[in-house]
Image (cartoon, rainbow, N blue to C red):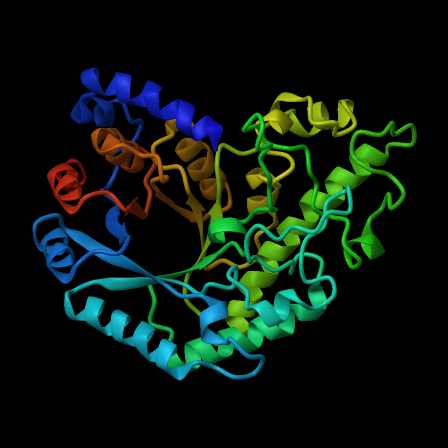
Length: 375
């Protein structure tokens, strides 16, 4: 998160000399314009103007498992009706609908079950938000699948994409905590609950301890592979629940890059290597591993930091190597002045869709010409 904030200032300074047409000319192959997606709570008037004047084509509808199933096995039909009405209203305005099922916002009854929450190496249970531990709590996955079946039976399956992540903010990630005194990320690995201990290849070892028998490497490989397997289960659960369309896996932040695994292992996951200081390792941001593990052909690689050129190019490259398309959304710290650069980067990397998150409708409309120019 801090790396995103730091990058905003540098990107804003570069915008004064940024010329989208020149940037497109530098591309090795002609790029087609991504479609434009909208994320946020806007009025119907704003949604209408963004569609008509800004050429926005897709809108995200989000829901929460906790609101849909407040009591185990009992669904709030009025809540589901409100989501259905929102979808119908946006379709009437001309939008296709991308969808967030809200599995990451688990109901309290689920989180109260043994092993349904994450636990770090210090034995502390993570309760700062309501994402369930379905990475290791595999016995609870059928409950999520049952919920998804209810959702698609009620709302249909006519979505442009359904988002997959299952962690904080709906992204593919383990939890994290910041030190309140310093604001820095704490060195916490969330794989020490009762279920995780059953498959941990180094069950007596903890991050930061010496690993004379290679415990750090075995643990980290298992930790990262577990999140990649969770990704694939989520996609399979969508299929089992009746959604046969495109699943969009949300890969957050900058991500681990070549050599980061070895750097972290060399210091026994003590939190002192550069990728651990930035939290990429602890949060499981190994998109290279995760994209390589994808098995379903109807998936898009979806980045959550569209204003970072390096990250967009990196994820788009991983997608191409797998024969997949890529999409991206702007982060919560994206500035309106960055939109021309964001849109040019999206075109250069042949993104299928670029989503703009919660910026003013007037800013989106004013910048949309940088996408339309390539159409």
